[in-house]
Image 1 (cartoon, helix red, strand yellow):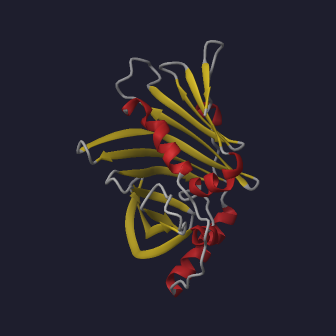
Image 2: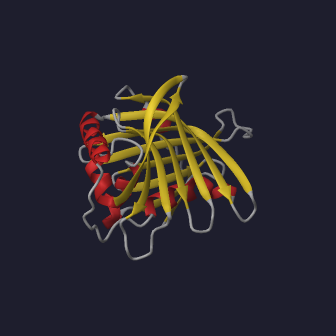
Image 3: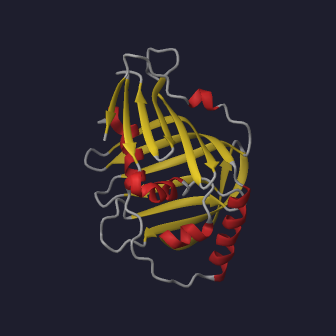
Length: 242
């Protein structure tokens, strides 16, 4: 199961049911201001790069496993591109790369160099939902967040990025979807509204499993070496479409 965990977490994120019914809800004055801050920061957002740590807790076995790596997000017109490298510290390979994940042009790809295989998922008609989920952490508009989720403002909380204090706002999100198909019971994010980025995210499932994502060394609107995130296949690479 751990072998497929990198893909699983992306699938869970990108296929989590997003809203079909979006009823109006009055926000507190504080939350309204915060969402407007996110709107303004989103307009300035071009890209972001960060290191990450993903912790997975499985309730049935009472086990927590961890993956580390680096990730980038880039705005491409009205769409979002994403690339991630998941590292394996126990790999015999000098590169230590366990997985390479890429989302571009409404297509999600995950490359497993260990078996030289690319798994492909097409967003299709769900492109807007996929990218709305991706921008929970980076570059998303506050108005879009409010449109998709019931938001509970849990107040400010100081976190650290690269040794520097960052004041975030802790928000708990529950899908406005009313058909009961949401993958997660709720999601908690710690967002820096001045940069439209998240420093921490927690995803909770009904089974009691949860994932925590930590982001650090975050660079916004800088130069990104996208070649370092490229999927490098050869004629022996197999491609599996889902």
